[in-house]
Amino acid sequence: MKKERITLPRQKSLYLQVQCQECGNKQIVYSHTTSEVKCKICGTLIAKNTGGKAIIYSSIVRRFD
Image 1 (tube, rainbow, N blue to C red):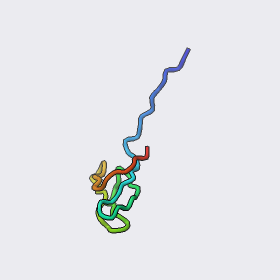
Image 2: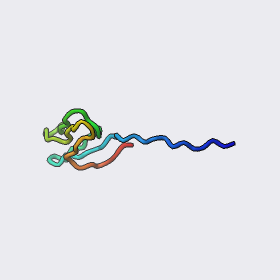
Image 3: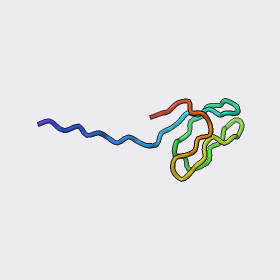
Image 4: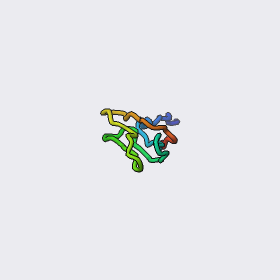
């Protein structure tokens, strides 16, 4: 008797490495952030909370699963 393979559910949220449009600074942001995220160098808005998945205003460089 073999056990059936049970697939594990994947997370819907992940960490993203984003690059600021103004200064080019890279920083890591959570995809479901609960607060506004601003660039550490120039202060422009990178991500805005929506109560669920955040709106990302900069370019996504890499995804961390």
